[in-house]
Length: 360
Image (tube, rainbow, N blue to C red; front, top):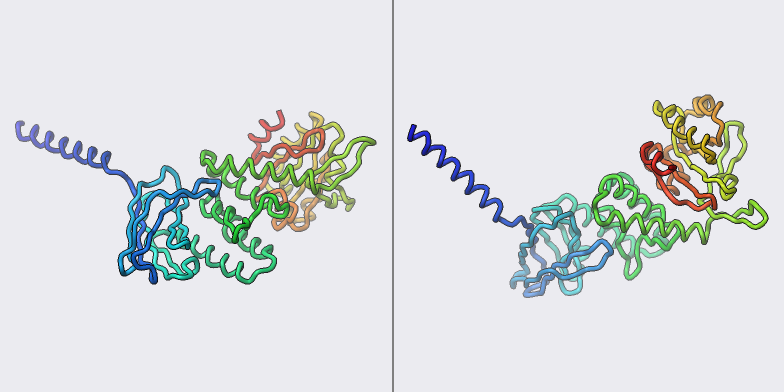
């Protein structure tokens, strides 16, 4: 009996020691490496806030052979850091306890480095190298930005990498500029993904506010204007598509007439369509205009499904590659957008529960 008690006490002490040791040990990450052409040089680690501002948090010096190592506390949430060596920078993300190993060469460190120890760091370096090559060619970056969207943003699910590429600069100009009306769709894509997958991330609110502000400015500056009444004009992200009778129907026809307008992106041949249409019908019965964009691949099935709908329903022949859906940053269905009585885009809902709250 006495031996059993002693064994239990020993086990309890061992467990307590393990817990104390674990609690006292600070979680951290390490960044180390070797930079050719940078002997006895200052190495500064900087941390970015979600507005792109950089602040130094630690520094060291390389050895005569260009080697360095810095250990830092792990961030509470994933963050982007950068190494500064002689005015050149290497960018890398940190999630928790990684060891990032950077091998590079100066001069030209920005395009002559390789990170190891983190898959996301490798993807970030890949993007930076590709961006440097594209910027060196000069000219219009529109095609490059679309490639970046397809590779790093479209299916990002709120990744830190998508935020990084969105806020990257080329020289002293942003690659994706929310003040540029052609770039708003990229901001709204990342904002939507963060809102869905990272609602508590501090970047989420920043992205959402930036996207909404940019949309409002675009609507004011470039939205297609139509005089619907003698003294009333409206601006909107307009859509013009054919209904089931082949007649072109524009969203702007419905806006600014003193009634709220609900824009719906859905697929009428989808199994969930009856449930979605039931919710839309309640909005229509409450006095709202409804402009429903169907992204169906089956044109015949769409015509049958749209036959008895009492609101405007149009077919986008581009279906899941719809440029109209891209303008509204639609990456899944259903999605609902609400315009107020003056024809101003004011809110978005990504599911039926959110729709019910939005239209109250």
